[in-house]
Amino acid sequence: MTNEHKKDVDHISGVETTGHEWDGLKELNNPLPRWWVWVWLVSIIWSIWYFVVYPAWPVPGGATEGTSGYSQYKELSESQNEIHQRQAVYLGKFEQASFKEVLDDPELYAFAVAGGRAAFKDNCAMCHGTGAEGGFGYPNLNDDDWLWGGKIDDIHTTLQYGIRAGNDDTRVSQMPAFGKDGLLNKEEINEVVEYVLALSKGEAQASMPGYTVFQENCAACHGEKGTGGREVGAPNLTDSIWLYGGTKEAVYETVYNAHAGVMPAWGERLDKNTIRQLAIYVHELGGGEEDTPVAEVAVEDVVPVLNVIEVEETPEGGVIEDVEQPLPVETDRVIVEEEIETPQPLIPEDILNPAGDETPAAHLPEAPAAE
Ligand code: HEC
Ligand code: HEC
Image (cartoon, rainbow, N blue to C red):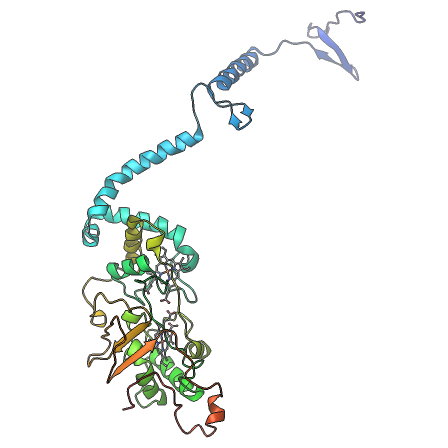
């Protein structure tokens, strides 16, 4: 190899050039700035150190481990342990405490609500909405309007066993499909729908044609005044809060076909403490119904049993009894079977009875006679 160019020194700066030249501009061969060289050397040393100490190089099945044994999984589980340890202090107390004791202890209460809020996002928001605002068929849990009761114990039972969830302890009831199963004819349904709409506006009158239909067919569950019956999860019809819509069409549809909302039983899926936290959280959302017995929920620990709900009207109204076995009943009682066999021949009512001058044969079994 021949060295073709001699040392070329720039005559202005007196610095040797590299010999590279572009359009008359020559590159000076200045030394690198010292600070830059130091940073460069330090970063090389640092990267070698890092390489040795930390997991750095991908190998099959992970990465080189490094001498420190560091891993992000380990870091995560350590910080989780720390959280669990801090929680354990509360959890121990929470486990022992009754709902009342939790409500009376601001720290435990805050702990329960925080846990409940997190569990709600994970398990409940997909049906009830992230803000628990509900939707068609899914109740809003923020208001103080409860289908099955708003005391903490009621909510706890609802969560533990679910609603129509197919276990022995679940909350069960079934509104009859008055139209589909031929229990009422179209005219009666229209009348009772008008009556229900009037109830929701506070304009219901005993003189309305739907009044009698309502008292005979609906009051057993929804109450004489339509204010609902929590023992059977029958909504209050006087408050303009609708689970299935409050238009004439929607109410007609409900009375014709009936609905039966299903909520899973959480006792099978979540641990005991989480369910208790959720009960407290949901109770708080709904404004915290007091533990004092409300007239409507005088019968405390009844859960409608299996397929048969037996309902008894008392003079005060709304107090309902349940029994294990369907009993023969003489008066004033309505037995509603969960699965109602179509009691009518399949010939439409208006063909059988074109004049429409008689009420159809099929009412609820043993419905009380008209006043
Ligand atoms: C698969 C949908 C679904 C999920 C998930 C769900 N729910 Fe429900 N929930 C319902 C339905 C439907 C009803 C109404 C049942 C009825 O019509 O009686 C209901 C009713 C309730 C009620 C009774 C309200 C009342 O007025 O009495 C409470 C309380 C409740 N849910 C809380 C929860 C909590 C807490 C969770 C999460 C652990 C949850 N739900 C998850 C569907 C769901
Ligand atoms: C066996 C008890 C029972 C009887 C009898 C009954 N209902 Fe119901 N009703 C219920 C239950 C339970 C629900 C709630 C269903 C659900 O949550 O899925 C309901 C829901 C409703 C709703 C929907 C309310 C809303 O918020 O969307 C209307 C309207 C209604 N019933 C009207 C009537 C009328 C009118 C009658 C009489 C013709 C009647 N019900 C008879 C139990 C009953």
